[in-house]
Length: 244
Ligand code: NAP
Image (cartoon, rainbow, N blue to C red; front, side, top):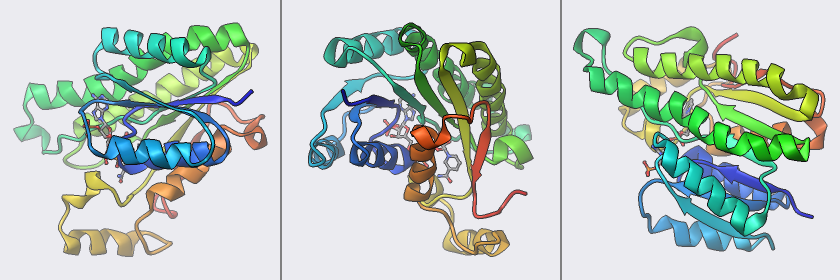
């Protein structure tokens, strides 16, 4: 039977590319989206063109009840969740001196608490199945820190602690939990930066370019495949050598 992969925040950027890549490797795909989006139709078509099933669930990952419902809907549709990719994330960048309490809370609520909300609802099914793969999307900023991103860096560092702790809790039940730490990736999240800023950052990257969503999706595919069956509790950097 085909494996079922659930990807949060998969309407665009890295999440969308992960969904398409896992579909190409033969997984049935469940995506979560927050806002109604015209792109969903084309994502559905692209996924289904790989002869796999597609199912979309609406919900805000920062809302526990939404996550509970989304997971129930996926289980009702597919009966199992074999792969979970916690991808949904936001930024609200500004220096701490100017940061509002809401800017801090929003980022923690979506990125970190969202990861808890979804995982908490999925994990019972993986434990029962005695197998499963969870990949949490962190960031190099969660390791290095970054001026203007105290909220985001705290959320992404939190995801690393969450990943390692859960990996230890569930290893004996055949569930593998890893994190991916992307560097500077071309998506809507980084589109807001001026071209000069992007060029300056690219110069500091040993591989001399921004990453693509596909670069990240390829590593997620590895971490959900048989090839990584002895890898758990790890943080894999996908950053062109930016942080080493
Ligand atoms: P993006 O283009 O901004 O896409 C983010 C996705 O998350 C969107 O589909 C968005 O949906 C969804 N989302 C946001 N808040 C949500 C919520 N509360 N509930 C459900 N879905 C929500 O960002 P991206 O660059 O692809 O980033 C994907 C992940 O990679 C994030 O966790 C990000 O922190 C991480 N990352 C990105 C980079 C980079 O350079 N791009 C680097 C390191 C890590 P809506 O449109 O409905 O908001």
